[in-house]
Amino acid sequence: MSRIVYVNGDYVPEAEAKVSVFDRGFLMADAVYEVTSVLDGRLIDFEGHAARLARSLAELDMTNPLSHQELLEAHRALVRKNCVTEGMVYLQVTRGNPGDRDFLFPDPGTCRPTVVMFTQSKPGLADNPAARTGWRVITLPDLRWARRDIKTVQLLYPSMGKMAAKRAGADDAWMVQDGLVTEGTSNNAYIVKGRTIVTRDLSHDILHGITRAAVLRFAREAQYEVEERPFTVDEAQAADEAFVTSASTFVMPVVEIDGVRLADGRPGPVARRLREIYIEESRRSAI
Image (cartoon, rainbow, N blue to C red):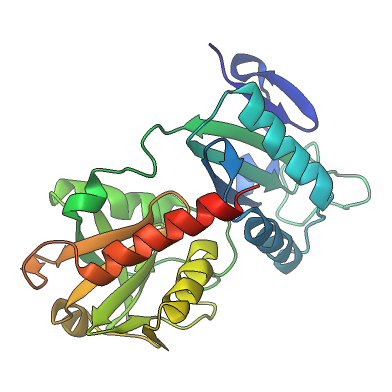
């Protein structure tokens, strides 16, 4: 069955979905995006993703083309039309099609944003076998632009990082700037020492992860200590355990960093417990 996708208010078969070659998302990567996970046919952390979308658009002086209710209804419609039980809804908003190429922003009064949404079905999203064995990561210099807190579609360097990890026989890459870990290619990074969880503090240096916020809230409720500060690669390699969080991986244990095995090389108890809590609470609060 062909996927049904959303393009500027219309639901069309994916083969019929079209965006202009003059769209600034295509020409300039002048666009933002969000990814909302689906469990049991319902949306996870939708309010957080909607709020971050609004923030990203505002940071780029881009018009928010949909109301909160319209955004929610479109997400639910795509899940329903594509019979998604476990998976993701991807949303991209571009500055639109001004009719030609120009570095200057077009007049928002005459150039409407382009909105595209589509689903990806991912059976077994919650019961991911990788969570039972853990990820191996490598480190790379962080060469991305300085406003990583805005969730733009400028994903070339993260894509290069994932390819570098694949060539190295690893699962992902952690970015390092001035000797300190910023985040993974598409996730926030954490280390654990005893019952203390360490993750980089919020700033322009990292994405303000929606899953991050939820996991840290659950961690504090479960009586874990949380330190929001930068950490070095050496500190990470000496940690008891490590993990990453994102909308698509939830909580994913990390068992090796640049070839150095953490503890016994298996997912640690803190990461395992936080994954359990996150999935349980997400299922309970999904909409």
